[in-house]
Length: 297
Image 1: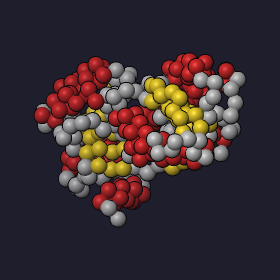
Image 2 (image 1 turned 90 degrees about the vertical axis):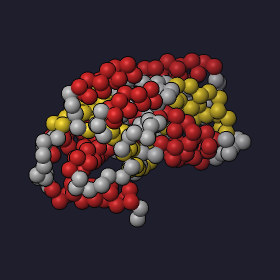
Image 3 (image 1 turned 90 degrees about the horizontal axis):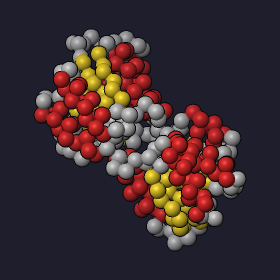
Image 4 (image 1 turned 180 degrees about the vertical axis):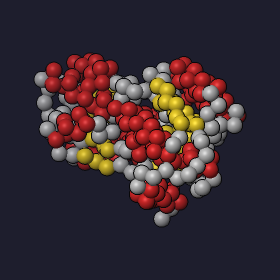
């Protein structure tokens, strides 16, 4: 068993053993800058942070960047001024590097959640392996299509680690199959309405589409709405995150598949790591990869 797996098991065991009891600790104040609270995935992550902080008796500031880099920078600068002891950040974009490094230089340890950013000043990262997820989802589509078909790829926010990594992973798979043709690859910005508009234009331009690979469920639901409105049938649509409405759409056979990621557990583990970091109870790993699973009809 590798070190990361052991740490995650320790986390799970502690949650069970504590049974809701709080370990005696000094007062800790942390901040969490989350990319958005429109996407249910990140709502669940923020809920995990708040719930675990309350359970542990930790004070937490949760600030919503509204998917705007300039707001996230301002938010983190505000958290630095509040003299938080640990910063949790789910970055909107790699452009958050400078303000993250500013926090680290101010003596505030930084833990990234779900979206990594390119700096060595981050103490720990918690999230899913998005390159691997990109490969897994792409391979699932290839297998469903029997290695042949026209595929649309709906990317997330350009520059966001999760989207760029999923793009790398999926491209590695698709290029291995000569029968797979990527007829369109565009960004839906991880947004339902934007993805719907993008897909409407793609449907007008592409008479033959066999599958749409969406990098999250919000875009998958937007794509589904566009496909339904256009009266197109026989198109496999996949997403990831396992949002409630996407799971219901899978049960109805409207979405072909979604990949369940654990956003609430990512948030909770971020708080636990922040506590361990400041109390020195247990050393925290540099990277923790959370498990995922496929949800199909």
